[in-house]
Amino acid sequence: MKVGVVTFPGSLDDGDARRAVTLAGGEAVALWHADADLRGVDAVVLPGGFSYGDYLRCGAIARFAPVMTEVVRAAEGGMPVLGICNGFQVLCESHLLPGALVRNDHQKFVCKDQRLRVEQTGTAWTSSFTAGQEITVPLKNGEGGFVADTATLDRLEGEGRVVFRYLDGNPNGSLRDIAGISNDRGNVVGLMPHPEHAVEELFGPGLDGLGLFTSVLSAGLEAIA
Amino acid sequence: MGRVVIDVMPKPEILDPQGKAVVGALPRLGFDLFTSVRQGKRFELEVAGDVTPEVLEQARRAAETLLSNPVIEDVVSVREAGPAGDTTEAQA
Image 1 (spheres, each protein chain N blue to C red):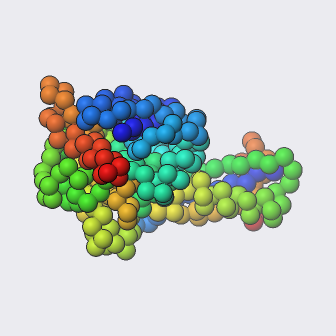
Image 2: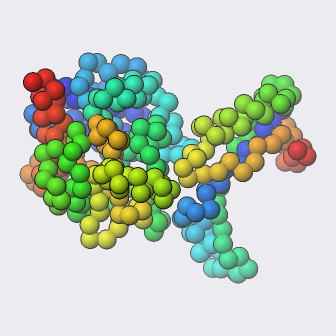
Protein backbone atom coordinates (compact mmCIF):
# COMPACT_ATOMS: atom_id res chain seq x y z
CA MET A 1 0.00 0.00 0.00
CA LYS A 2 1.32 3.43 -1.00
CA VAL A 3 1.13 6.30 1.47
CA GLY A 4 2.06 9.72 0.10
CA VAL A 5 3.72 12.34 2.30
CA VAL A 6 3.47 15.93 1.07
CA THR A 7 6.45 18.25 1.33
CA PHE A 8 5.54 21.94 1.57
CA PRO A 9 8.12 24.75 1.67
CA GLY A 10 8.94 24.62 5.40
CA SER A 11 7.85 21.04 6.17
CA LEU A 12 10.08 19.57 8.88
CA ASP A 13 8.70 16.13 9.59
CA ASP A 14 8.08 14.78 6.11
CA GLY A 15 11.18 12.57 6.37
CA ASP A 16 10.05 11.12 9.70
CA ALA A 17 6.54 10.57 8.35
CA ARG A 18 7.90 8.62 5.36
CA ARG A 19 10.08 6.62 7.74
CA ALA A 20 7.06 5.84 9.93
CA VAL A 21 5.14 4.58 6.90
CA THR A 22 8.06 2.34 5.94
CA LEU A 23 8.51 0.99 9.48
CA ALA A 24 4.78 0.19 9.59
CA GLY A 25 5.21 -1.90 6.45
CA GLY A 26 3.92 0.50 3.82
CA GLU A 27 5.48 2.10 0.77
CA ALA A 28 6.18 5.79 1.37
CA VAL A 29 5.83 8.09 -1.63
CA ALA A 30 7.15 11.66 -1.57
CA LEU A 31 4.59 14.19 -2.87
CA TRP A 32 5.45 17.77 -3.80
CA HIS A 33 3.31 20.78 -2.88
CA ALA A 34 3.55 22.31 -6.34
CA ASP A 35 2.49 19.16 -8.22
CA ALA A 36 -1.23 18.54 -8.63
CA ASP A 37 -0.44 14.82 -8.64
CA LEU A 38 -0.94 12.18 -5.95
CA ARG A 39 1.19 9.61 -7.85
CA GLY A 40 -1.32 6.82 -7.38
CA VAL A 41 -1.11 6.70 -3.58
CA ASP A 42 -3.79 5.06 -1.40
CA ALA A 43 -3.48 7.49 1.51
CA VAL A 44 -1.87 10.86 2.25
CA VAL A 45 -0.04 12.34 5.24
CA LEU A 46 0.32 16.11 5.62
CA PRO A 47 3.36 16.39 7.90
CA GLY A 48 4.38 18.74 10.67
CA GLY A 49 6.63 21.75 10.52
CA PHE A 50 5.64 24.89 8.70
CA SER A 51 4.30 25.79 5.28
CA TYR A 52 4.91 28.91 3.21
CA GLY A 53 6.26 30.62 6.33
CA ASP A 54 2.79 30.15 7.84
CA TYR A 55 2.18 33.74 6.77
CA LEU A 56 -1.36 35.01 7.18
CA ARG A 57 -2.37 32.04 9.39
CA CYS A 58 -0.83 28.59 9.88
CA GLY A 59 -1.80 26.47 6.89
CA ALA A 60 -3.71 29.29 5.19
CA ILE A 61 -1.49 29.50 2.11
CA ALA A 62 -0.76 25.75 1.97
CA ARG A 63 -4.47 25.18 1.55
CA PHE A 64 -4.18 26.64 -1.96
CA ALA A 65 -1.12 24.59 -3.00
CA PRO A 66 -1.71 22.65 -6.24
CA VAL A 67 -1.35 19.32 -4.43
CA MET A 68 -4.10 20.28 -1.98
CA THR A 69 -6.73 20.46 -4.73
CA GLU A 70 -6.05 16.77 -5.33
CA VAL A 71 -5.86 15.94 -1.61
CA VAL A 72 -9.22 17.61 -0.94
CA ARG A 73 -10.83 15.81 -3.89
CA ALA A 74 -9.39 12.44 -2.80
CA ALA A 75 -10.40 12.99 0.84
CA GLU A 76 -13.95 13.79 -0.20
CA GLY A 77 -13.90 10.53 -2.13
CA GLY A 78 -12.93 8.61 1.02
CA MET A 79 -9.13 8.39 0.78
CA PRO A 80 -7.49 8.27 4.22
CA VAL A 81 -5.75 11.59 4.98
CA LEU A 82 -3.79 12.30 8.16
CA GLY A 83 -2.69 15.80 9.15
CA ILE A 84 -0.06 16.10 11.87
CA CYS A 85 0.56 19.46 13.57
CA ASN A 86 0.95 21.89 10.63
CA GLY A 87 -0.87 19.25 8.57
CA PHE A 88 -3.78 19.48 11.04
CA GLN A 89 -3.78 23.25 10.58
CA VAL A 90 -3.83 22.78 6.79
CA LEU A 91 -6.80 20.37 7.06
CA CYS A 92 -8.74 22.90 9.15
CA GLU A 93 -7.95 25.74 6.74
CA SER A 94 -9.03 23.45 3.86
CA HIS A 95 -12.37 22.86 5.63
CA LEU A 96 -11.78 19.10 5.59
CA LEU A 97 -11.94 19.35 9.38
CA PRO A 98 -13.89 21.88 11.49
CA GLY A 99 -12.37 24.38 13.89
CA ALA A 100 -9.02 26.13 13.89
CA LEU A 101 -5.69 26.12 15.72
CA VAL A 102 -4.61 29.27 17.53
CA ARG A 103 -1.55 30.34 19.50
CA ASN A 104 -1.01 28.39 22.74
CA ASP A 105 -2.87 30.06 25.60
CA HIS A 106 0.32 30.33 27.68
CA GLN A 107 2.06 32.05 24.70
CA LYS A 108 5.06 29.71 24.80
CA PHE A 109 6.23 26.99 22.45
CA VAL A 110 5.69 23.57 23.97
CA CYS A 111 7.95 20.56 23.34
CA LYS A 112 7.43 17.45 25.47
CA ASP A 113 6.35 13.84 25.50
CA GLN A 114 2.57 13.96 25.78
CA ARG A 115 0.16 11.36 27.07
CA LEU A 116 -3.04 11.00 25.04
CA ARG A 117 -6.16 8.89 25.22
CA VAL A 118 -7.39 7.30 22.00
CA GLU A 119 -11.09 8.15 22.13
CA GLN A 120 -12.16 6.77 18.77
CA THR A 121 -10.86 3.62 17.10
CA GLY A 122 -13.36 3.68 14.22
CA THR A 123 -11.22 5.92 11.97
CA ALA A 124 -8.90 4.89 9.16
CA TRP A 125 -5.94 5.97 11.30
CA THR A 126 -6.81 4.51 14.73
CA SER A 127 -8.19 0.98 14.15
CA SER A 128 -4.98 -0.59 15.51
CA PHE A 129 -5.63 0.90 18.95
CA THR A 130 -8.09 -0.26 21.60
CA ALA A 131 -10.77 2.18 22.73
CA GLY A 132 -9.52 4.27 25.63
CA GLN A 133 -5.91 3.21 25.08
CA GLU A 134 -3.40 5.64 26.54
CA ILE A 135 -0.36 6.46 24.40
CA THR A 136 2.64 8.77 24.65
CA VAL A 137 4.00 10.67 21.65
CA PRO A 138 5.96 13.93 21.30
CA LEU A 139 4.11 17.25 21.15
CA LYS A 140 5.79 20.39 19.81
CA ASN A 141 3.84 23.44 18.77
CA GLY A 142 3.43 27.16 19.17
CA GLU A 143 -0.07 27.37 17.71
CA GLY A 144 -1.76 24.20 18.88
CA GLY A 145 -4.83 25.50 20.69
CA PHE A 146 -7.84 23.82 19.10
CA VAL A 147 -10.88 26.10 19.01
CA ALA A 148 -14.36 25.88 17.54
CA ASP A 149 -17.76 27.23 18.54
CA THR A 150 -19.76 25.38 21.17
CA ALA A 151 -22.18 23.86 18.66
CA THR A 152 -19.28 22.41 16.66
CA LEU A 153 -17.60 21.05 19.80
CA ASP A 154 -20.88 19.43 20.91
CA ARG A 155 -21.31 17.89 17.46
CA LEU A 156 -17.75 16.51 17.47
CA GLU A 157 -18.31 14.97 20.92
CA GLY A 158 -21.78 13.67 20.06
CA GLU A 159 -20.69 12.07 16.80
CA GLY A 160 -17.60 10.45 18.32
CA ARG A 161 -15.26 12.56 16.26
CA VAL A 162 -12.91 13.50 19.08
CA VAL A 163 -10.17 10.99 18.24
CA PHE A 164 -7.42 11.95 20.72
CA ARG A 165 -7.60 13.82 24.00
CA TYR A 166 -4.78 15.28 26.10
CA LEU A 167 -4.10 13.64 29.47
CA ASP A 168 -2.14 14.97 32.48
CA GLY A 169 -3.07 18.60 31.84
CA ASN A 170 -3.85 20.66 28.80
CA PRO A 171 -0.59 21.68 27.06
CA ASN A 172 -1.88 24.46 24.79
CA GLY A 173 -5.36 25.62 25.75
CA SER A 174 -7.22 23.33 23.34
CA LEU A 175 -10.93 23.42 24.12
CA ARG A 176 -12.17 20.28 25.91
CA ASP A 177 -8.60 18.92 25.89
CA ILE A 178 -9.02 17.95 22.23
CA ALA A 179 -5.77 16.76 20.64
CA GLY A 180 -7.19 15.29 17.44
CA ILE A 181 -10.46 15.02 15.52
CA SER A 182 -11.88 13.33 12.42
CA ASN A 183 -14.35 14.17 9.68
CA ASP A 184 -17.77 12.49 9.80
CA ARG A 185 -16.62 9.62 7.60
CA GLY A 186 -13.52 8.91 9.69
CA ASN A 187 -11.11 8.89 6.75
CA VAL A 188 -9.66 12.33 7.54
CA VAL A 189 -7.93 12.72 10.91
CA GLY A 190 -5.91 15.65 12.23
CA LEU A 191 -3.93 15.84 15.46
CA MET A 192 -1.43 18.22 17.02
CA PRO A 193 0.96 15.67 18.60
CA HIS A 194 3.51 13.83 16.48
CA PRO A 195 3.00 10.05 16.20
CA GLU A 196 5.68 9.85 13.49
CA HIS A 197 8.31 10.65 16.14
CA ALA A 198 7.39 7.59 18.22
CA VAL A 199 7.85 4.67 15.86
CA GLU A 200 11.34 3.37 16.60
CA GLU A 201 13.17 2.18 19.73
CA LEU A 202 15.82 4.63 21.00
CA PHE A 203 14.15 7.54 19.15
CA GLY A 204 11.42 9.31 21.08
CA PRO A 205 9.27 8.00 23.90
CA GLY A 206 8.41 4.58 22.45
CA LEU A 207 6.46 2.95 19.66
CA ASP A 208 2.98 4.28 20.43
CA GLY A 209 2.85 6.36 17.26
CA LEU A 210 3.21 3.39 14.97
CA GLY A 211 -0.45 2.45 15.48
CA LEU A 212 -1.70 5.26 13.27
CA PHE A 213 0.37 4.03 10.35
CA THR A 214 -0.41 0.32 10.84
CA SER A 215 -4.10 1.30 11.07
CA VAL A 216 -4.19 2.88 7.65
CA LEU A 217 -2.29 -0.04 6.13
CA SER A 218 -4.80 -2.55 7.51
CA ALA A 219 -7.66 -0.31 6.33
CA GLY A 220 -6.10 -0.48 2.87
CA LEU A 221 -5.82 -4.28 3.00
CA GLU A 222 -9.48 -4.58 3.98
CA ALA A 223 -10.44 -2.35 1.08
CA ILE A 224 -8.56 -4.65 -1.29
CA ALA A 225 -10.02 -7.85 0.25
CA MET B 1 -3.78 54.08 -8.07
CA GLY B 2 -6.42 53.13 -5.52
CA ARG B 3 -6.05 51.36 -2.24
CA VAL B 4 -8.36 49.30 -0.08
CA VAL B 5 -7.67 48.78 3.62
CA ILE B 6 -9.03 45.72 5.39
CA ASP B 7 -9.00 45.16 9.15
CA VAL B 8 -9.30 41.69 10.63
CA MET B 9 -9.65 41.04 14.37
CA PRO B 10 -9.75 37.88 16.46
CA LYS B 11 -13.32 37.09 17.48
CA PRO B 12 -14.21 38.46 20.93
CA GLU B 13 -14.80 34.97 22.34
CA ILE B 14 -11.43 33.66 21.11
CA LEU B 15 -8.54 34.10 23.51
CA ASP B 16 -5.96 36.46 21.99
CA PRO B 17 -2.60 35.45 23.51
CA GLN B 18 -0.73 38.12 21.50
CA GLY B 19 -2.94 40.87 22.90
CA LYS B 20 -2.54 39.34 26.35
CA ALA B 21 1.25 39.44 26.03
CA VAL B 22 1.13 43.09 24.96
CA VAL B 23 -1.17 44.16 27.80
CA GLY B 24 1.22 42.43 30.20
CA ALA B 25 4.18 44.40 28.84
CA LEU B 26 2.59 47.86 28.83
CA PRO B 27 2.73 48.55 32.60
CA ARG B 28 6.43 47.65 32.65
CA LEU B 29 7.00 50.75 30.49
CA GLY B 30 4.74 52.91 32.61
CA PHE B 31 1.68 52.66 30.35
CA ASP B 32 -0.67 51.77 33.16
CA LEU B 33 -4.03 52.99 31.87
CA PHE B 34 -4.88 50.07 29.59
CA THR B 35 -6.83 47.09 30.87
CA SER B 36 -7.06 45.05 27.67
CA VAL B 37 -5.33 44.77 24.28
CA ARG B 38 -6.46 42.78 21.27
CA GLN B 39 -4.16 42.47 18.29
CA GLY B 40 -5.52 42.20 14.77
CA LYS B 41 -4.29 42.50 11.19
CA ARG B 42 -4.43 45.29 8.63
CA PHE B 43 -4.18 44.54 4.92
CA GLU B 44 -3.59 47.13 2.20
CA LEU B 45 -4.68 46.07 -1.28
CA GLU B 46 -3.72 48.22 -4.27
CA VAL B 47 -5.51 48.41 -7.61
CA ALA B 48 -4.34 49.97 -10.87
CA GLY B 49 -7.34 52.28 -11.24
CA ASP B 50 -9.93 53.75 -8.94
CA VAL B 51 -11.58 51.90 -6.10
CA THR B 52 -14.91 51.09 -7.71
CA PRO B 53 -17.83 49.28 -6.05
CA GLU B 54 -16.64 46.17 -7.93
CA VAL B 55 -13.16 46.49 -6.38
CA LEU B 56 -14.67 46.85 -2.91
CA GLU B 57 -16.93 43.85 -3.50
CA GLN B 58 -13.97 41.71 -4.56
CA ALA B 59 -11.95 42.94 -1.59
CA ARG B 60 -14.81 41.93 0.71
CA ARG B 61 -14.88 38.43 -0.77
CA ALA B 62 -11.08 38.13 -0.50
CA ALA B 63 -11.31 39.28 3.10
CA GLU B 64 -13.85 36.60 3.94
CA THR B 65 -12.20 33.71 2.07
CA LEU B 66 -8.44 34.17 2.32
CA LEU B 67 -7.53 37.11 4.54
CA SER B 68 -9.57 35.90 7.51
CA ASN B 69 -10.66 32.58 8.95
CA PRO B 70 -14.31 32.96 10.02
CA VAL B 71 -13.83 30.32 12.73
CA ILE B 72 -11.51 32.60 14.71
CA GLU B 73 -11.60 36.05 13.10
CA ASP B 74 -14.00 38.80 12.05
CA VAL B 75 -13.55 41.17 9.13
CA VAL B 76 -14.31 44.44 10.91
CA SER B 77 -13.71 46.89 8.08
CA VAL B 78 -13.22 47.00 4.28
CA ARG B 79 -12.75 50.59 3.09
CA GLU B 80 -11.19 52.79 0.43
CA ALA B 81 -8.01 54.58 1.43
CA GLY B 82 -5.63 57.10 -0.11
CA PRO B 83 -2.64 55.99 -2.21
CA ALA B 84 0.29 54.15 -0.61
CA GLY B 85 2.42 56.43 1.52
CA ASP B 86 -0.60 58.59 2.26
CA THR B 87 -1.63 57.59 5.74
CA THR B 88 -4.87 59.53 5.69
CA GLU B 89 -7.78 57.36 4.70
CA ALA B 90 -10.64 58.43 2.49
CA GLN B 91 -13.92 58.77 4.29
CA ALA B 92 -16.13 55.78 3.56
